Amino acid sequence: MTIEQAVLENLRELPTDKQQEVLDFIQFLKHKLSQIKEQVQEKPLQNKGDSFWEGVLRFRETIEREGIEFTDEDFADIRDRSPGREIDL
Image (tube, rainbow, N blue to C red; front, side):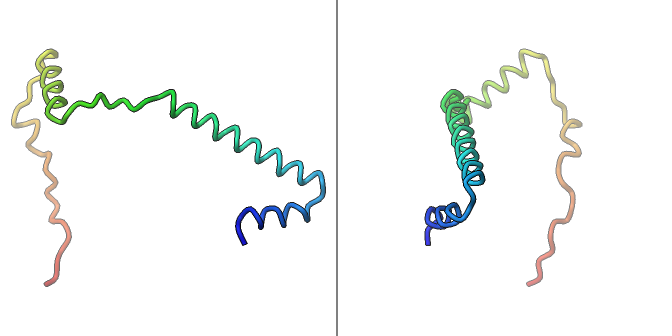
């Protein structure tokens, strides 16, 4: 039995007022779905199609423009020093 068949079978067993509630809910879901589709179509992906290297260059330009300087101390404790998982051979 398909979902459609199961829904129809159960719908037929409900009183008219409950069938109307089911219909209202279906219309609500369809409206909500159409709003989501509209939002997706209105908002294209923000990817400018830049390659990784172009992104790195833009990052470096921003760092230089804002006068940010990195030192070895900035990266001293960045590495995860946990031993990781143990492997039994």
